[in-house]
Image (tube, rainbow, N blue to C red; front, side, top):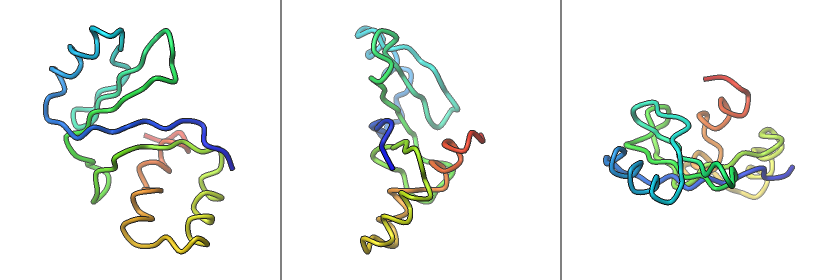
Length: 104
């Protein structure tokens, strides 16, 4: 299993202000679902940041999102390490699994 990307999720109700500020640094909005907005640098696409009013798909709002090449292997590794409960939910939420599987 390998990590493909890590995106910080900033909890904020100020999406428009954040878009304007980070736009000054060259970031562009690539996704906005009302409760989550993602900005990406066109010149360095791995430079990404998300702003979340709250995670509407999970009971917790994550501090970061990770994309891995094999979510089942990642989940198994976390279980084997002893991670459980909220910590495991934060690491591998169902929202992340849906995105990796290509569902919306």
